[in-house]
Structures are given as C-alpha cells and as structure tokens.
Length: 176
Image 1 (tube, one colour):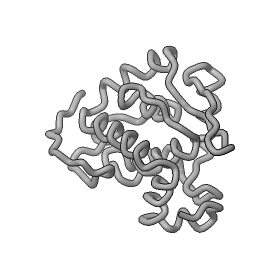
Image 2 (cartoon, helix red, strand yellow):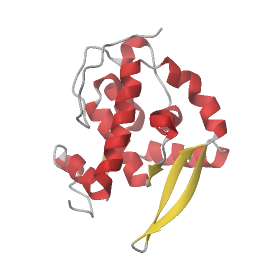
Image 3 (cartoon, rainbow, N blue to C red):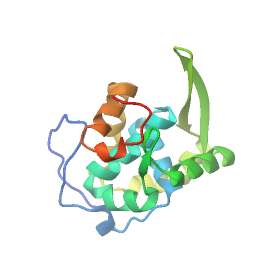
Image 4 (cartoon, rainbow, N blue to C red):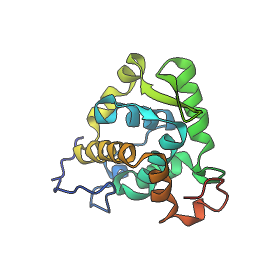
C-alpha cells in the first residue's frame, strides 16, 4: 500500500515530525535492507566512510519520524569511541560486502584511508521493490539526508550529531 503525503518546500537537512509513521504503513525491514535502501536512495549515490554511514542512519533514526521507531529498534545505537554506533550495522555491512550486495572501494585523504560504499547490481535488484514501495516523503527525506550529510562533511556531520545528542559523544575520541 502506497501512502502519498504532500511534501512542502523545506531546505533543511533534518525533518521534524509528520503525521505518517512508516510502521503504520506496514514496513518492518531488516538492518541489511535499511542499509541497501540508504545506498539506493539519492540516485544510488555513494556514502564516503563507515562513520558517515552510521551517522546518517543515526540521524534518520532520530529525526525522520517515519523511520524513527523502526531504525532505533533495528540498529540499537549506543555511545562509542566515534559517537553513536551499532554492532548490528557493523555486522550487516560486513555481510552485505561478503555477499556482493554492496561494493567497497578505498580513498585516501590527508593520509587517512576510508571506505566508500555503493550498492551493487545484485544489491539494487534485491532492494528495488522495497524502495519503490516506500512512501515518496520517506524516499525524499533519505535522499535529502544523504545530500546534506555529504555537504556537511566529516566534521560537520559529527557536530550535527554531537550538538543535539551529547549523550552519544561522551565516549567519543573525536570532539567537534
């Protein structure tokens, strides 16, 4: 069942509560499926770094109400050395890499190497139907979140997470 919600013009990275809750429209996806959805969104744009990927999921779990409850229950984020993190995310990401559903490459910037994640043909085939069935507002918000996170960059995304959620920064080795 598709639910259509009018999207009002909003250039903010983050979206506040709307009346539609994804749980009400019957979506309960696995961690692997959520990871693939995030990689499929925004025209299958890549996500630069595991830290960035985890923070995008964390922000969505707290600030896109339609996804909040499901993502929180699925990923169970906790304070870690690099802010909010999830063992479920780590294990699911590794499994998706091993099965070929996602492709990883590496880039080095300022002597620091990080992985770049993108969805493979196999992963896109697996998730396309789930993605197409999501409400348009959810697809748009995930895409905007990905674009906004990319524009903020590494330190910007940390500041965006640590400021409103200081309880997740208490163990962090990186202070914004």
